[in-house]
Length: 122
Image (cartoon, rainbow, N blue to C red; front, top):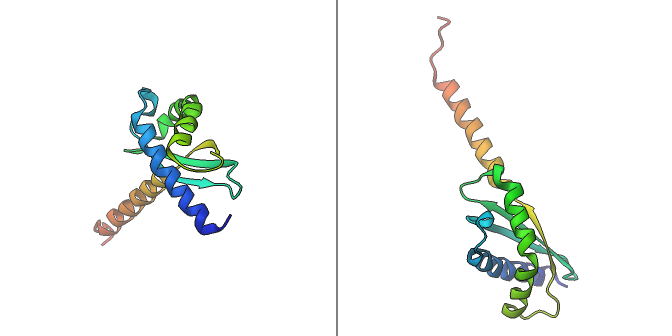
């Protein structure tokens, strides 16, 4: 499969999974955001990257367990919403991009705060 088609399928799956996860009644997956979907070239699997907003790494295991529990339902519903020969198996992964960005932002803010403090050595 071409790289462009693979990206388009990934974006389509991301949109549909976002909607489906939003409809789930399981409180473990409340507030989950699907940040990306990376389908394999042969569509056997698709890595689904998720996070919560606001980012809450403490919920990681709970969220992933809820999504694993709903995996069969999500795949079945995807089959009815998208036209693909094969619906890939879903592999849920925590996306820590926002966590890392937040950490970097806090470090930068702290550095700026240290630079702005007057020196007491005079």
